[in-house]
Length: 230
Ligand SMILES: NC(=O)c1ccc[n+]([C@@H]2O[C@H](COP(=O)([O-])OP(=O)(O)OC[C@H]3O[C@@H](n4cnc5c(N)ncnc54)[C@H](OP(=O)(O)O)[C@@H]3O)[C@@H](O)[C@H]2O)c1
Image (cartoon, rainbow, N blue to C red; front, side, top):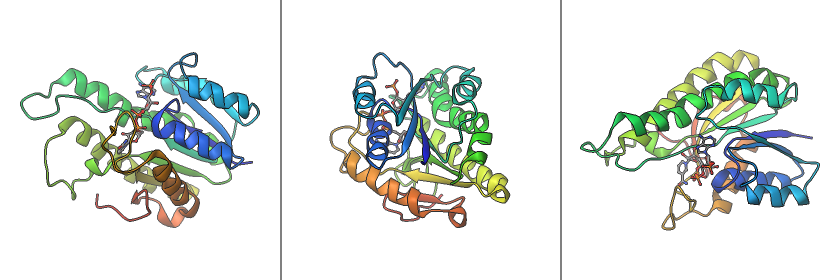
């Protein structure tokens, strides 16, 4: 049975992945910051007691990598989805300040690499050897015609650069590394005016995950499979 690991799984796209993968008879290992308040995860665990493992992980903690490695142990991970992410308010030129910026960089940029580093041996032991990062079109330099959003844009542009380096470093070991834009999606982050539903985004991204392989490593793809400019 395929093992998928998803971070930030208690709501939004993370929970969307959990629901859809469980429906496909996949074994899901997921992380959330606080298990007791992760009501949707606890409810779905009752329906799939054997196929869902829930671990507690706060990506703002400097010990997150070691914590995750201990929790995962020697389980093979076939597909790793680095999903957890945050945005910020006051992101225009006159308003940006270091403290909220650093918090976003810790979660969106540093943590995904530390997570990947901490369980890379588990991915090597997996049968699919695939790693996906939830980036954003807002991280694209080529697509930036509207400016602003300094904090979020820089975190996702940096993440894209990490994806590229990882894809180069891990190619010879047969590990596929891809950057994904989920669309502008109706979640707490995307807000109610977003045009794409969680279902549509997750179905699209799961198809991309299914159909990509080592030949696609180092690509930046939209949820519908289209190539995005870096
Ligand atoms: N929605 C969109 O339109 C959109 C567009 C482009 C890219 N994305 C990206 O897609 C991913 C998922 O977004 P979403 O829309 O599902 O966002 P969301 O609804 O705001 O959910 C974010 C998830 O990340 C978790 N998270 C935040 N900080 C964390 C931390 N320090 N440690 C562990 N988990 C943490 C949250 O957990 P808590 O509940 O504990 O906060 C939550 O599970 C993000 O990387 C986002 O940047 C989203």
